[in-house]
Image (cartoon, rainbow, N blue to C red; front, side, top):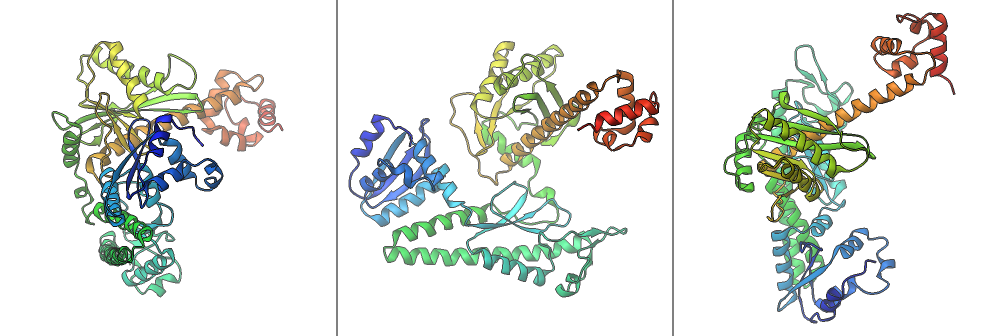
Amino acid sequence: MATHSSALKEKVRALPDGPGVYLMKDRLGRIIYVGKAKSLKKRVSSYFQPGRDRALRHQPKIRTLIEMSEDLEILEVKSEPEALLLEGKLIKQWRPKYNTDFTDDKRFLLVRIDLEAELPRFVLTRFKKDTRSRYFGPFAHSGLLRKTLATMRQKFGVMLNDTNPKKMPDGSWQLYDDVRAEIYGWPNTVTAAEYRERVEAACDFLDGKSREWLASLRAEMSARAAKQEFEKAAELRDVVLALERTLAKTRKFTRDLTKLQPNQAALKELQGSLGLAAPPVHMECFDISHISGTFVVASMVHFTDGRPDRDQYRRFAIKSFIGNDDFRAMEEVVSRRYRRLIAEQKQFPDLVVIDGGRGQVGAALKAFVGLDCPPPAMIGLAKKAETIIFPDARTPLNLPLGNPGLGLLQRLRDEAHRFANTYNADLRSRKIRESVLDDCPGLGPKRKVALLAHFGSIEKLRAASVEQIGEVEGFGKKAAAQLHGFLHAP
C-alpha cells in the first residue's frame, strides 16, 4: 500500500461520524472519486486501515484509487438519502476517473454499429472505440441481449458480426451463402440503400429497448431507496447514469453520413471550446513512434477544413540523439518543422496538436522558445482519457465523447499515429532486409539491389528456389546455391 502524507492521515482521523459525500483527489488536486457514506469516519477510514493490502489483492481498481489519493474533501449532509442524491449529482458534474471505471465495468455490454460501413452490422462490445459509430446500451443481461439481437436479425433482416456479405458484379450484395438465407426469410440479395432501410428500423427497435430498460431501472432504484436499501440504490443509480450518457451520445441514423458530423460544426465547436479567435481551418498534429527506443521516427499530418491534406504531410527520422526520449524527439521535430516554415516565410497553422500529455506539450513549447518566436495555438491530446492539455495555466479539458470537435481531434491524432507507424514499419522492414543480406558473404550492393527489385521482399526471396534465384541478373547457379544455403542455414 502507498504511504500517504501525514496531512491526509490527519484529515481522515478528524472525519465526523455523520452522513455525507467524500471527494478523493490526486496530487494535482483533481477529483478522481466521489463516494457517499452513512458514516464518513468509518467509510473513509476503511480505505486506509493497516493490513488492507491483502484484502485488495483481487481489487486492483480500488488499490490503484487509494494509491493515487493524495487529498480528501468532504461534504456533510443530514441523511443518507441526501448523500445518495448529492453523490449522483457530483459524479454527473465531475465525471471522476474511478467512478467512470466502476460504472463502465465489464459487466455491461454495448451494441455498436459502424455508421461509415457500406453494410453496417450490429456488433457486441464492452467499450466505446470511436466516435463514428452509434452505440446502444449498456445492457446488464448479456443472455437476454443476445436473444434480443437474434430476434432483431429475423425481424428486420440485418446482419450481426458473424456475417461476411459478398459484393455481386452488378453492385448489389449477397448477405449469406448458406441456409440462413432461407431461415431468416428476407431477400438475400439487396442494394446498400435497401439494406440501410432495414438498419434504420432495427436501430429504432434497439433504441426503444434501451429506453424501456432505463425506465424500469429508474423505477427499481426509487423502490430500493424507499426501502432504505441505499447501497443497491446507488448501484442502480450508477447504471442509470451510464445508460443516460450512452443514449445522449447516440446520433440519429441517416443515409447521408456526412451530415452526422459536419466539419464546419466541428471546427466551430473547437473554436469555442479552446478559446480560439477563429475556427482552426489549418491544423497540424505531431506523433512520435518507436519500438523500445529503436527506430525512432515522427510524423506530422495536416488537415485543411477538417479533412486530410496529404500533400502537406511530413515524416521525420530523429537526428539529434539515439535512444528513447519522446520529449527530446518532439522538441526536435517541432523545431525542424517551424524553422523551415519561418525560412520559407510561410504561415503557421491555426492549431498545433501534440499527441501526448503535459510533458510532450512542454517539449513542443520549448522548441518555439528555441526558435525565438511565439507559438500558434497549441494543445496536447492525452489518449488515456482524451484529455486536452493546454500549454498555459488553464485547467485540462475533457469534452464529451460525442462532441464533434473532439471527434475531429481524434481523427487528426489517429491519422498522425497511423502515418508515424507506417514510416516506422517501413524503416524496420528496410533495416531487416539490409541486415540479412549484408551478412551474406560475397554479396555486393548491386546484386543485393537486383535481388530486392526482383523479389520485392526478403520473405519472397527466402521462398524462392535455387533456379528462381539464378534468374536474377548477376547470379549463376553456384552463387544462387550459396545464397539459398545462406538464407536457409539453421
